[in-house]
Length: 65
Image (cartoon, rainbow, N blue to C red):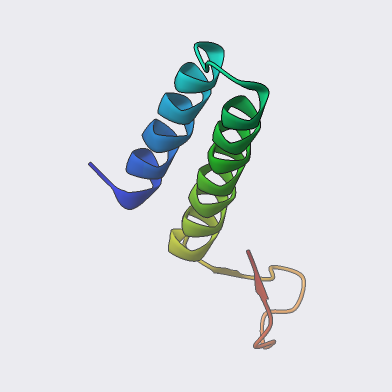
């Protein structure tokens, strides 16, 4: 399982736990934790995506993410 997939799994688990949280504070913390894992998954996906040269500028060193 990739890091990105693992991070998404952690985010889902935190949300599921938030659904059965016993207090508002616990629920809030778990929702925030889910958001943290979601952001980590997004960043990991962006960092692992291949970069492609910009097609309109064949000699350019700029890349599209």
